[in-house]
Image 1 (cartoon, one colour):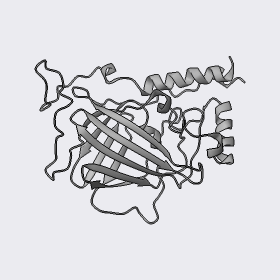
Image 2 (cartoon, rainbow, N blue to C red):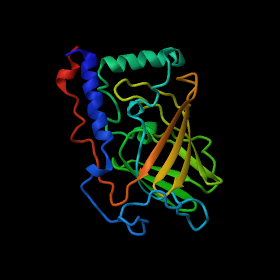
Image 3 (cartoon, rainbow, N blue to C red):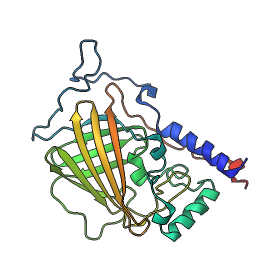
Length: 258
């Protein structure tokens, strides 16, 4: 099979696993206190719930949403001239290997920025000083709201170090301290450096939606910032389940034949 034909199959397989709709979950748990209309359906336009401190409460189970073309490739809008030569060359090599060394797909490692641009369910737990985001592959993020700064000498990690602050009803999250091991594109393997800087703006306009604007900068890899706009949907009645890659992380032997 032509290598790009195989890449297309692998990409579709990954998207099918990462972007499964909430309805595919088998575990149904009624969510108490959710406003519903006369027909019993979720009233997505109901007022935004607020925490005791007056800020919008982002807590809940959310179905991450992004256009299909960006789910596996958050850098889709970059031109070749926007990417540093070393990064393009490495990406080409990984593509020719069918992405077999993707640390998230075959290595079972956290996906870094790719975690919030693919599909799937995530749970947000909000307290006055800390927000925790849980993912089904047992990865997590901590967003510190207690006024702390990023560590001066941070130990680089897969998910980075996140601090947040409220600007009115918008939560602004600043993340640095990424290691350089995750890939920004499934299979094609665009790398990034430890200079990667991510800024997210979370806004809950109503009960049923969470609007997320994402900005990525990495002067060591690409020459202009990347921006993504996403809308997450509240998923009442669902629950996150363990989704561990020990069953589907074996790279098919026939795909390595060039």
